[in-house]
Structure formats: C-alpha cells, structure tokens
Amino acid sequence: MGGGLTIGKLVERAGVNVETIHYYQSRGLLDEPTKPVAGYRHYPSDAAKRVRFINRATGTRIYP
Image 1 (tube, rainbow, N blue to C red):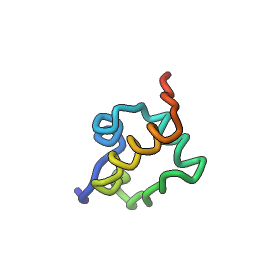
Image 2: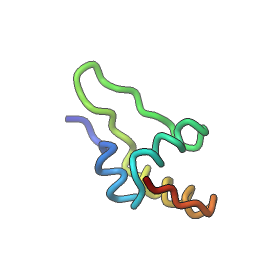
Image 3: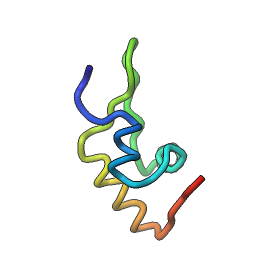
C-alpha cells in the first residue's frame, strides 16, 4: 500500500464528504492523484489541511 490518505481517510480528517472532494477537484482547487494500476488513489498527507482551508475560504459547507 502506498503512502498518503485514501479518499475515505481524507474526508474523515477534513470533515467533509466525498462529493465535496470531487467538487473541489472539478473546480481545480484540489489535485486528483493518479490511480495505480492495482490500488487506490492516495492523497498527500497535507490534503486534509488544504481541504479544510478551501472549505473555510469559500465559506461553504457542502453536505449530501
């Protein structure tokens, strides 16, 4: 298993949901990591801090 955070761990640490992560990626606010041939994408360990910052800076809380 690679280093970093899976999307499940990222949303847990950042306090948002998966849709929020995908939204930030679609807007170019958060890079989408490449997916290994056999495995899960891993976000950098500081990604949760960045997501929390983006969430505060935009003043939005996107929930399902």
